[in-house]
Amino acid sequence: MNVNYFQNYLETLHQSYANLDKGEVASYIPELLKADPQWFGIALITVDGHVYQVGDSRQPFTIQSISKAITYGIALEDNGVEAVLQKVDVEPSGEAFNSISLEPDTGRPRNPMINAGAIATVALINGESADDKLKRMLKCYERYLGRSVTIDEDVYRSEKSTGHRNRAIAYLLRNSDIIEKDTDDVLDVYFKQCSILVTCRDLALIGATLANNGVNPITGVRVLASHYVPKVLSVMSSCGMYDYSGAWVYEVGMPAKSGVGGGIVAVLPGQFGLAVFSPKLDERGNSARGIAACKKISSDFGLHMFRTGRSTTSSVIHASYDAAHVPSKRTRNVEQGRLIAELGHKVMVLELHGELMFTSAEIVIHEAMVAAKKAEYLIIDFTRAAYISEGADSMIAGLIQSLSEHGKTILLTGTWGKYETIKLIKKRIGYTDDMPLLNYDAIDDALEWCEDQLLAGQASYTAAEAPLVAQNFLIEFTAEEMEVFESMLEHRSYDEGAYLCREGDPGDLLYFLLSGQVSVIVPLSHRRSRRITSLSAGSAFGEIAMLDRGKRSADIVADDNVTCLVLDYKQLEEQSSPLAMCIRWKLATNIGRDLARKLRKATLEIKSLRS
Image (cartoon, rainbow, N blue to C red; front, side, top):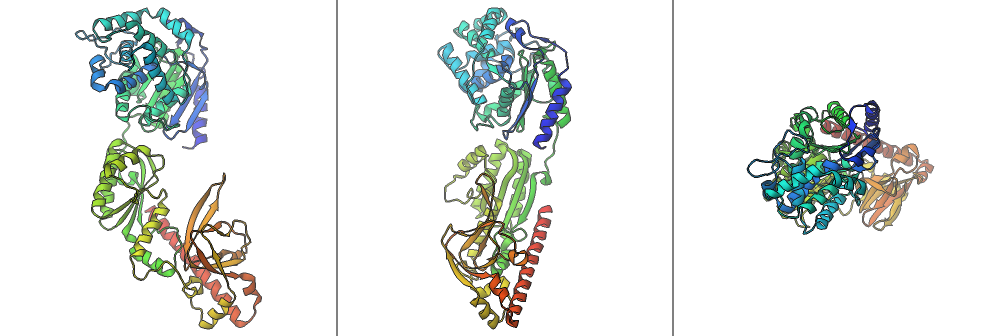
């Protein structure tokens, strides 16, 4: 799904429901009546931090009952699950949000999403005073939203002056020792909690943080401990939409929470947070436009959390191949290439895809163990892994540990941004800096390192120098031809980091590397660049210019101290002797053969990747 497509989709959706005129603005809190009934915003934020929004997505309004989900998470962190369960149950009440739904014997509220349960969870927030509890709460919101938050004082006063039913509930809770002290202070924090100002985009970010296992996907800050996220999402799923919760799960299928301010936030774990804001409420106190828009999005994209998706090898393993069929992009001499083709089966690459949950992680482990029967080096690439669950983290860590104990070398690539996964793996395997596990983020770099390890163990392999006669482009040259050709060459040396040539330079020179290594680098925008290949001793570059006389298309940079012999094409063309003509013909023929070999190699790589 590309950015423009989904943004266009949201704009069309917004237009479709903007004229939906069902419901009424909440009036039991007088200040809420000031909301414009036409306000309507939609926002969606993915766990990758991509933001899509339309309409009044930045219009401030009070969070109201959506705050209950956040407060419940704070209470869990401050007290632990068992202590919170002693004060607040997690059973759906099937009743309105302001119902006095308490257990007959204990006085315990049915769940934290109704007013009784929310007031009880406020009492569980750490803090000796009301100010301490409020500061703790606001700090949490700052981590969710990535900014400071404020309270709408007018709404707060309106809530407080009309909150008689909530006072009755609070004192019933105090009578049962669910609230143990300072009942009025707890109520005051509760009224302020409901009066916190947010936007539709803010709610989407709260949802995205919960979808991202408690980590704000934009700031990277952890907001809620990962083991409490499923607890919060569970009560949102079963109780978050009050007496509409069952129908919501049935029709929309995402954990959600609504508020009488007109907001709804929905969470699709591992994917995104979705928020809709529109002040007109239906008879159950949920945003009428919000319900309609969420139903439509869920239906159009098949987002129901109970929608079954079966993990198979093809859905989890994007590609698997060895270095014999898909070697690194490094250009090597004939002998090195022969050795890689012979030994490359000892290096195996598994490119993962999609979400790694229990079942998909089990498939990865099975495939890795099969590959490790032949391979000595295993590269596991996470570039396309959109989400990795905690259980999958542990399973992958166990795989690495097991294979390492059997003498296998594991490298993980594409791990940028997957901080929690890497942290857990490091801890589990006892990671030390001398391990090659995380040295390379790109598959090609890891492949090149593994190839070097294979080559270093071969008696016929020497990496330091390669004489001119070993060059692919000079195959079948006679001794006389080689002597004449060498007389046309200029000897050059370059220090590490020096440019042999730059993008845009005239392509009038052919370079033969005698020692050292160079990288071919393509300059990108914003002062960035990308290495596309490297060349070692025994290799040559600049041959394309011999065919088309074009300009250099990349930078060539010395990776270490380099020596080479350089041919100026003009000097070769100026000589008209039969010997010179024979040299030109052989050189062009060998260059053509080398290009054909590279094309065949590329074709084999494509076939291997497709299979």
